[in-house]
Image (cartoon, rainbow, N blue to C red; front, side, top):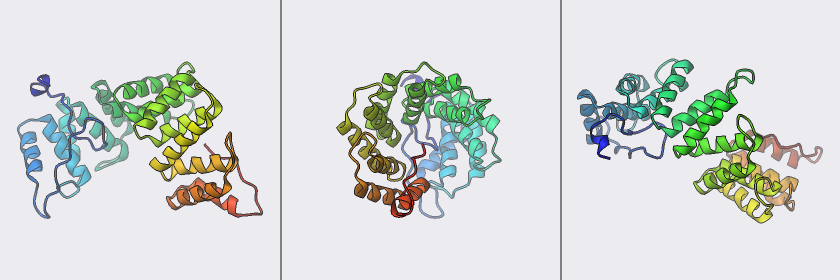
Length: 286
């Protein structure tokens, strides 16, 4: 904490919500600027990397000021140039998604890497996602696994799920279903629908843990509660197929209808097959 007072590496607000993000400033009345944002602006003018980052994030979000992504970019760039890892992470996010500027994946990857090295867990996960998005010929699975591991150590839940997926299949790392199950369980308890679904799958199959249908169904249900689209889609298909559990077409129909209403395309297709008596059910796409 004392070191935070004398170096420029303390965390600031992030456009994406890492665990150490500061609280957002209150919204200002129309045509005015909140006192918090005025302080951020003054801090940035005086050379505070954190002040520049926090003001830039406010412009990205339209939080207390009119949304202006173009105005956010130089503020985030200045923060990153002053070696604030969170500033580099937010700049990378803007560059990766074309917020206020043309998309620049190469620059985004470099800034994500700097932020990851600086301890911003979600930046490690974002960079790993970029690696995984490469074509199969270019994809560097060991690097993705290492980045997800760093992100997971930085308390980024999605990184833990990404690492668990690779551990489950032995891609880029030695196969370790027991460790994958531990990570799924941990992330489910932290509120990750994907973690709950992963834990449920391994429970049903007895991979990395013992078979426990009741525990698996509890995890699928929690995944559905956390994510009414993807989570309920998976839960619905499990109940429809009877994959290791007693089939419940009625409940499955309700879940698939709800997921479809949430905009999940495959849930709508599955529901259509279920309602169309002329067709059989198609296998679930994963």
